[in-house]
Amino acid sequence: MIGVFDSGFGGLTVLSSLLERLPQYDYLYLADNARAPYGARSFDVIHQFTKEAVDHLFRQGCQVVILACNTASARALRTLQIQWLPHAWPDRRILGVVRPSVEALAGLPPGSIPGETPASAVSGRLAVVATTGTVASDSFRLELQKFAPGLDLRQQACPLWVPLVENGEIEGTGAEFYVRKYLAPLFDTESPPTRLLLGCTHYPLLLPLIRKFVPPGTEILSQGPLVAERFADWITRHPEFSDRLGTGQMRIWQTTDDSTWFSRQAGALINVPVTATQVRLCQID
Image (cartoon, rainbow, N blue to C red):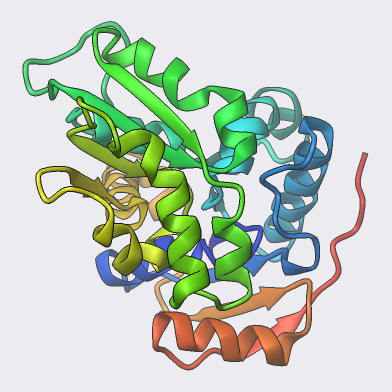
């Protein structure tokens, strides 16, 4: 299976795009709702939670796991890939969403090589809205400097957007207030960004409100479609993994919180029937 992990519901936006782009494969979606959100947690806690989730997915038979969580991708992916994966699961892979997002934000093709910025790179001012933890990690800026160091990037933390989505508050005056609050520092200026990346997979669920406060001339990028497109490219370039992936179109849903509640919320968010099971993640060293 292909494992897709997020702290909560946001990764469903990535999974939906994967199902549309690569429907033939088997997928297991795991949400750590019981411990969400991850955005304001410490580096060590995020690393431990992410490792437990990935280990669980590998034990369930996943050959590759996509961290559909920017906080986990920004703060845990690299150390897991380098320090844990080679001895724990050497035949598996963990992929994140930060690098493909930066490639798309900068107008670069999949699999771009650091230091070789092609002519297709965009110009102008770029912006990312993300969780507090992702912004604090500075991962988007550091990654962008590798591929297109001449581009200007502004980052804005939106600490209350994930709780809004997790509680189903994606419309109304309260949600509108906090969407406007965090976008104002970026757009109430003389030089607003020309491209805006929603650097958290929860944020596309607030897209109707976000569009109200973003000028028409600003392009908004959601991670679901761009991650799905770049994962399809990765699969093509790694046939040793595509040959190991099941193609029975199986869909498995798991949560660390109440399964009935998750099934109802998730089904409403992505408009498909969801029947989840509750799982417990074991702490590993």
